[in-house]
Image 1 (cartoon, rainbow, N blue to C red):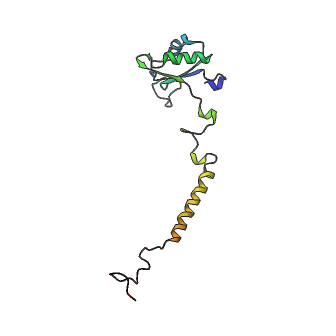
Image 2: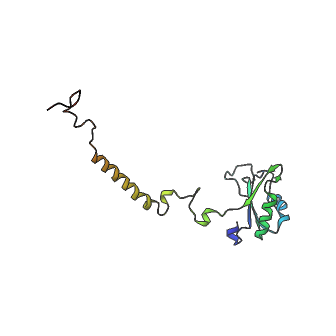
Image 3: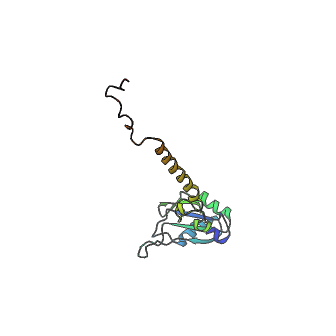
Length: 155
């Protein structure tokens, strides 16, 4: 993709593709009018026994970022083999950027600083709850033994 080749913003994402009809040659023919194409990728399905040639989306990398933008402006919401396609700027892979976030492969509690930030707050909360329990009597009826049914006894 764009980060690997050193040409940021020159790769477009193409989604909504027919998995059995659309090939690299099809995408090449559809996107060549917008500029010189340096690479086309159609990710393969995860199941090896699948009859699909790809996963229904692909990436087209142009030589120039302006060509990629032109392709987005002209091809988004167009049709290939009767299916409306989505064309947008490709986002860098999070594994390459190292950014944690939604869809991250690292659990949030394993991310740097999470435990340091939230462990102290949890300990403070726990201490406050224990202090409030110590301040209150355990039984709300405690200390009422000397009261009469109708009220306090006269002395």
